[in-house]
Image (cartoon, rainbow, N blue to C red; front, side, top):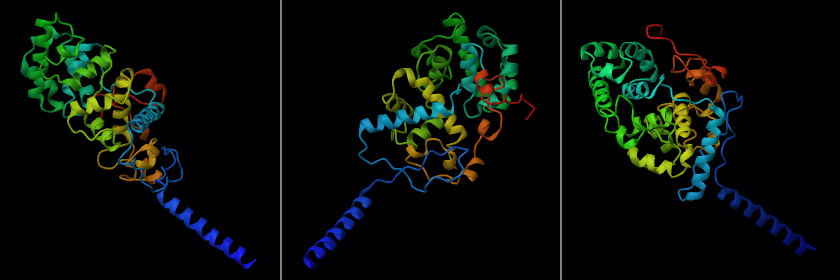
Length: 308
């Protein structure tokens, strides 16, 4: 009987030891999905995909993040006001080194005075500079928008071309601007690698690349081409509203369980809510004339220039 009891005791110790060893080997568990309405703070664990995360696992994680963001921002859209491809390409060029909001507050006066490429091509640069002054770097931007308007008028019959190879020939238009125009004015898939996009895809370990063209290629390979334009909107909206550069609102993040960088920002839900921007914080978005879906979701139009 003593031997049997000793064996049971020894077996129990081995089982307990084995459980401790197994627990020690278990990967860190993701915090529960956090949103602005969550009351309890998620667990203070950082979810780090293994350094040897397989290609299949990476693709699945990336696509799940996109699906989650699509639920959070079903009304995500380009945040530049435009009514036609010409207005969009000009507005996108003007958005460099400033906010979409500032561009949207400035372009109504520009397009009212110069509604077509031919009009802007023949404009007095000093008059255009005065209109564009609020956007910053207004002299260089004036040169670009007048220059691209001249090319459109002279080489493309006053129409914005719908091909990447033609768009990048326009003054001030690079691949990022071209894909914004292709995706949102022509419905042709493209990835917009702006500063928000670059920051987030690196935080999520979708790629370690730093060159925008290489980031575009690496991320594009993770998704079907048909997802590229909406993916860009989802990522950029998340970067502007929740996953900020200096202090991300981790405690209000809907993809916290999937994020390798969880914990870099504020994890307390109540404190994180105070970091949220735009409609999430009860504030208007970037557009003066946003799509109806955005208004239906509780978003508000931005104020016109001089109103705030």
